Image 1 (cartoon, one colour):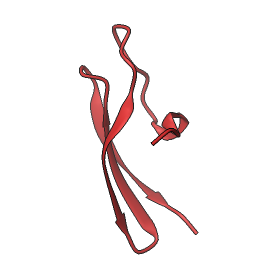
Image 2: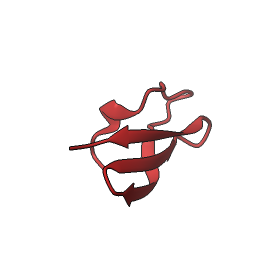
Image 3: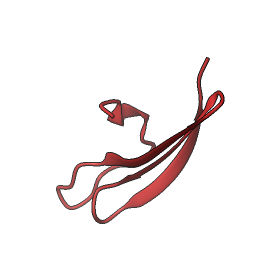
Length: 47
């Protein structure tokens, strides 16, 4: 996914955050992201 501006964290140690796993459930997107040092998950709603 190219919309890395949706990731609410900053990359560290020169890494680049990118989405790893994306699941679409009805009007929701559950996405995991990582740069090798920092990782997280977010839930997004779309219309």
